[in-house]
Image (cartoon, rainbow, N blue to C red; front, side, top):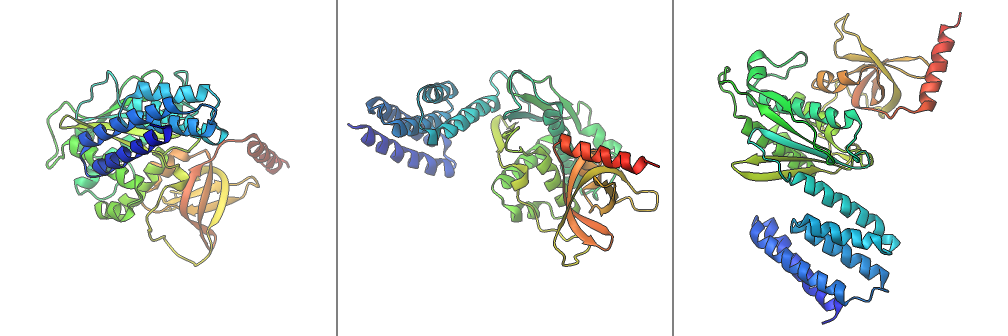
Length: 387
């Protein structure tokens, strides 16, 4: 049997595996994927290695199948063998991406880690993850935003009005606490425990398993851009705006961090969700702004210095650009405390609609600090201070 014939049979089993996986029959899907892998490996053995493109494509296919079979070691061996040879330039980046996925999925598999029902396993992969070191904010910023999302989910499920400022009420803080494990070498991965050792002190408290389960369900909907279903689950616009803002903070940027994964256990069954869509490409709900002037959105880059709460404008921030010009920006409900406030004194980009001398915020994010910007800002500040 030729290499091509082996490959065609393998693809037939892949189709069967995908169909059964879509129908929820994971055991049968796995069996089909294993048969497909056997035929794909046979196709590699029969192939003339002078055909660089076919050799690279078959290794990529076999590595992917080994990953589908959860044989991470074999997937690694297949992919690294392809990369160690002379892979076709068209496929080499795809092979590197596949190797990254293999390592990431292995970390999500939590070898040697036993989760409880009130725990979440958070793992990152990308250029910033290596040699056991990572920038502090890449991991702990996501830990903080995950904790905020879990608290907001608990408050929403309890029927509480959206909390614009301050901490959750004492009963919620006592019953839902976020604890973080020591980071695990090489992943980079930590475990978050969202629970309490005390007896419930607030009537109607939800089990932490339900809170974590809804958190995972919503991330799956984000992955598939199923905005309508998210809006059905989160009907309050303030909670909805807050959810999408926090998810954007969790999501990868596509370069430094390529994937953000969560794993949880429910009733003894392991479940993993991977966020791979860069934050800039995430879907967003259509929410009403404070005012619609019909104007095109305006973009401003500057330093977020303060909010004007002294005159009853607690929803307003100021952005100072390189010309030392101050821009007033109205922040919609659901964004100030969890999303905008942590950005204070950072270089940010703001997108919004200008109405008079105020901009109604649509989106905001922290920019990379670059020397050119800081130099121009410092020069403008020095010029403003001259007599």
